[in-house]
Length: 311
Image 1 (tube, rainbow, N blue to C red):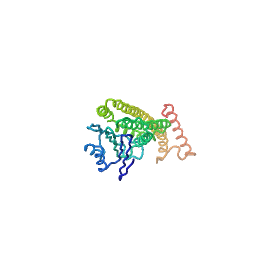
Image 2: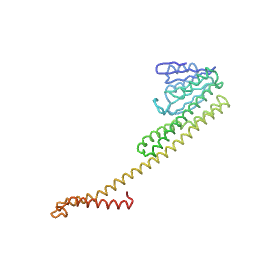
Image 3: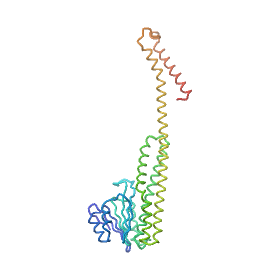
Image 4: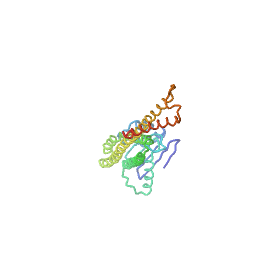
């Protein structure tokens, strides 16, 4: 079920006696309504109104409160980091966000279909909804990193095709995306470890297996992210090396060309001196003689450079 309240979007999903409420950009009135319906602590309610700077997990008498940030690399999002607040009770889970989060939207479709067909293996408490939700979020991050991997392979091919200069900006864009991933996920490990402890205390020891599974999904993303960052560092080093080599070759060619033309310019300057008795000047075919001398000097210099392998 979906409700619209101004810019706020509220989605309510039910499965047997379990309830999932997904709220985007909540107002004071919506938060107050959730407080009354689910007996949410005023401390949690106050934090749900605005984004938080740091992730955390806390246990209350009747619920768990979890804050995590996820990277958003696709277009259409207002921020590079997207926050999700999870309020989890025994029979309900509330997710509060401040922008569209694609994995949660897709999860809601799966949840609705499974609820209608009554074929889901969702357990008897809302912790299992959190488990499947978190797995979906980390799986989606893995897909995003797989797309980054495709970009890196494309950039590698173009680097070795001689497009080093054009790849500098593209490599920087990939670096920005991976940095966004790192900033979003750097606090997930200790938070998930804490979630494992408080989750077992709140839902029972059997739930520890599911929190371990969530951590396993996170470790997959972390390992893939580290691999991507190492690959990017190698590609940037290779690109910089090739670009430096190409620049040095250009500078070498320009310097050699300058040295080739220097004797020719010197000869021309000598024959243009305002002297009373300049040799060759005034004789028959003097122009062609001077041209011949100039070409001979340039040819000799060029041959010398080739023998020295300066060209």
